[in-house]
Amino acid sequence: MHMSRIEWIVAVSVYLLVAGAGLYVFERSRNSQAEVTCQSSMGMLANAIFKYAKDHDHHLPSARNWWSDIYPKYCHEDDPCPKAHRSSGVAYAMSAELSGVDVRTIEHPDRVILLYEACNGVPEYRHRGGMNVAYADGHRAWIPRPKQEDFR
Ligand SMILES: [Zn+2]
Image 1: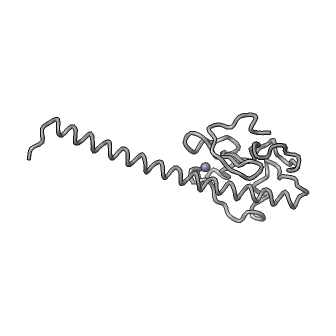
Image 2 (image 1 turned 90 degrees about the vertical axis):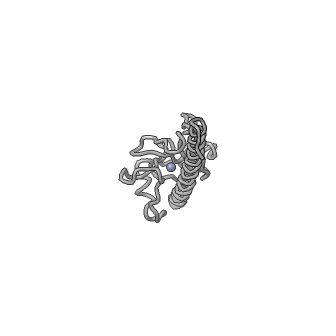
Image 3 (image 1 turned 135 degrees about the vertical axis):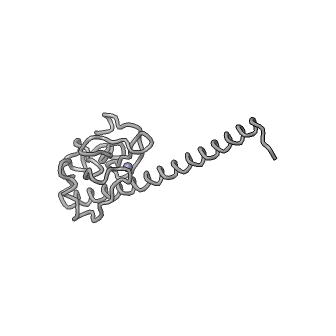
């Protein structure tokens, strides 16, 4: 059976379309898996920060030293975002606005960012052009861009 030129073009186009769609779905599921892992790491870190605060008269660690304040005493695993560069240190940053703050004085902990994705303090958009954040009540979310009012 011989295929005409048109049939070939149609066959190749359909093949490319199907392959492209498959790759897209694969990429998407791989990305969302990284996002889930990242959010669970952030949840662990937020919990460790809250445990630290409990032991320190409700005060959060300093934004500069939060990692060495919680690791390894309150958090035993160094499980960064799968999309972060392994060699660049801690994959997240703590909000400077909450440095050393008494957690009881945070007015809307569900709206104030505690942790965000960063490399050396510089925000990094690792997931779908946005980033994961952990709020001061411990819940996590993906956001496109943090706004100034998200930090207190
Ligand atoms: Zn991440």
